[in-house]
Length: 111
Length: 112
Image 1 (cartoon, each protein chain N blue to C red):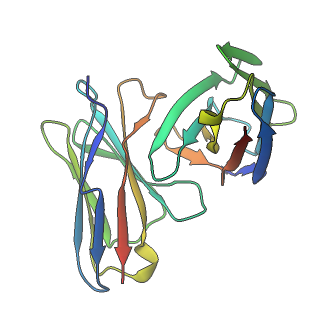
Image 2: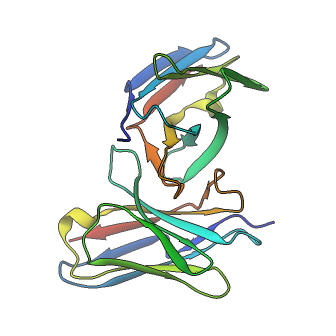
């Protein structure tokens, strides 16, 4: 079975632009979580969705939003990009709440 | 609150055992995890332990949990060059929304 997939793998944007990152969970998994990993740090929780409903939100500004679709895939949107948004964005899917499996991530560079 | 601390760097010779340590502050943590991240890659779930256990062994990996001291360790037996990576410990706490709280990671370099 395929693991968690994310697209694109790399992205370069300029300050002020908007970005959409995509995630497809492992087949059968209904929960998707998003994390931001700044270089040299551990991942920080952004959002969690289960059955298309938001179940948790981390300490991120309103410029960050997400949604989950009926097929359980998910999008993370970031508006008005700042240089500090440069990071690896990781998506994790889970069937059992306590087992989260991560995708390869999307590396976002904001210039 | 959720706060996980790790030391930063470990160098180990191939074939030796390596031990990575982690401390956490949330006494209500329900699950504690070890994830592995290779350069340029996502996170690989290595193992996890439920908070009512004090040890879990899975092939070359041994996890020890000391709840009194809020200390988690990962021992890798017969360390191999493919074990070179950054290792993150993480916890899920009391809030029930299953958000993982990660430490800053511990880089392990295996010397052939």
